[in-house]
Length: 392
Ligand code: SF4
Image (cartoon, rainbow, N blue to C red; front, side, top):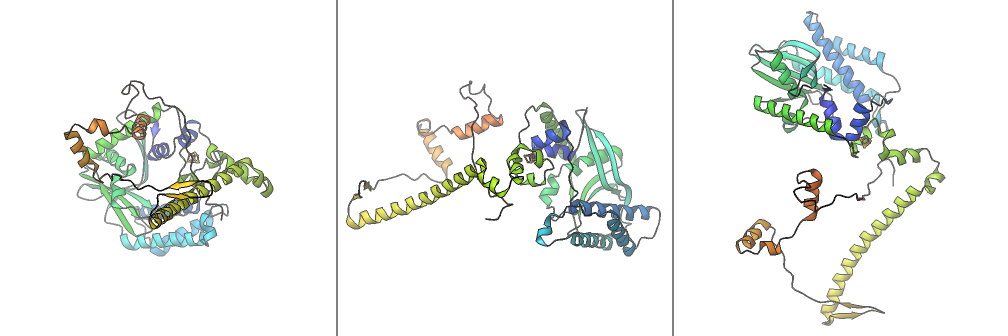
């Protein structure tokens, strides 16, 4: 049986290829620590120290706590920490100040820290899922009150506030509430709390037993899907910029090769030339399409003005013919209902190949359902995206 975690499953959902590299091939890559992770880790350590000292009845003033964070920063900060926003004038010092602010705000909000009984800090454990697999449990702060309410708390230093919908859909903490209910039989409720430190606000959610049962089932289904997967396609999204495997991912092989080329070699690269020409042609096609529309409008005006339906050019004749066309209503359902009633639907409804194909590929319609009439073959799709790393 395998030990799964929220992060493991999320990796598969984000990019199956990344999952393969990380969990199947177990490829290790050297990646720099980002300043966001560094600051977040230090804030976690500082808040852990706060509650540990409280447990031993030690006095912890705000100044002492902030000094602890600053000392940690001095001790652990190194120049190889990646500050991605440095080009926007945001330095490590800015992040250090942000961390100080988060700790100070948290201190002021929760002082004297006796609202709840702390049961665990940075708690780690494993729980067994119904399918026999293990699930990693890691809770920043586990607490309870006198009424049998338990609190699974997570510190977040994200620059984006978690809204209620997101909190209610979160899988990670929700699964931990199953672990809490199992460990603490007096638990009447388990509240999931995200301390959104950048906003000095909390996001809180709670799940019913039915919701937890469904969530557990969904996780087991996802694990089954992962374990039966034999192909791990790449999923190129904006998240690739944060992927530690970008340097070895085939999707970015050409980019990596180009980075090593001189300006002259770059210009001569066949791939660069093809994309540049393709992009130019695509743009010209768009402009031509627009111009075609404009000319057609002018031809209509000209034909009306002269009351003619043929306009003569040097070697071509443009025929402008008015005709009646039917505009279908926006409310298609109503029309479908009428056609069905009159027995005309089968004659005028059309097979939607795109929709059927998409459902076959998703597995919603099986090969057998269409008696093998539809063949699945490889095709290519083209799209052009702007390179964010290059100024136009
Ligand atoms: S770079 Fe993108 S496509 Fe490649 S493995 Fe990472 S997430 Fe997947």
